[in-house]
Image 1 (spheres, rainbow, N blue to C red):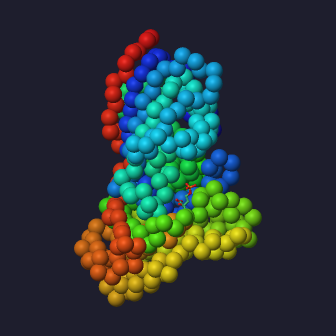
Image 2 (image 1 turned 60 degrees about the vertical axis):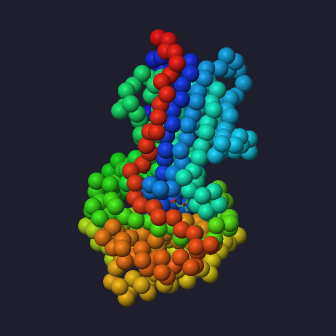
Image 3 (image 1 turned 30 degrees about the horizontal axis):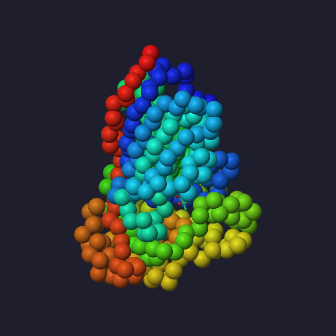
Length: 369
Ligand code: PMV
């Protein structure tokens, strides 16, 4: 089925040009943890697309005279040349090249920067792979002589997935589902699909305040993390549970049932950590302050009757999710009661966003028919 992403013969040859895109991070509500082959998920997942936490990437491409040897890439991160990122980019190019056959024809200068602080403990692989993938799909659009509107977002998601699984949920739409799921027509293991139109409107303007509990602490790398599910005692049960949770969450999100949303989102976060706590070797990624924040949040929810809930990534930071109509009270509570548990009082105010945005395209230099 991946064959659908092999392009037809390119229509024009372009000697030089550049593109620039920004792609956001995303936060999973139903977690992807465990994979096979190249980022084929063992269970479906669903995420909120974020807006403030994003990566901006520009790609300048110029035709190569000698195409005989591998790829030709210079990579800069926040203005500095970074040779150490090249092996990862080469692996990504190897996986993407069958679907983007122009990758050996050009020299690429790739410049990338994040909108969130470097040492925040926030993983940037989703936003950075999504931004890079859409740049290359945009270059291909030009080689196919297609208008801007014809940019293939599904292919951008497919290519992003080859770099980092969850990156495929960072391209298009406020709520994105990835992974084949019996209750979702059109769902696929190969790319994310926007699920926004099925959701109650309360979920299209949700807030996510990210509490930076432990900035320096290394998260479990996703390669290690997904690997832990290989012979995990509870793996099969967990994969089946994710399918059921997704069906239940979709029901709650289409009707606007906030109580059920809170229950499922928190259960998914704790299940992700339960998988790490019970793997061989096992990982304890929550810190004492992670638990303090969770405890305080849950008692605030009970006493206030409001609906903030938490979710976690593979690390100690806590994402507090809440609807726009509860923003004032919940944000006050976060500032007064939770920020003290953050390292140096650090937190990031984010909210649901739309996906990747084109920043600019410099006209390509020569078009030869
Ligand atoms: O996309 P990866 O391989 O970095 O894995 C992401 C895993 C989690 O962030 C823990 C869960 C998810 O679905 O995003």
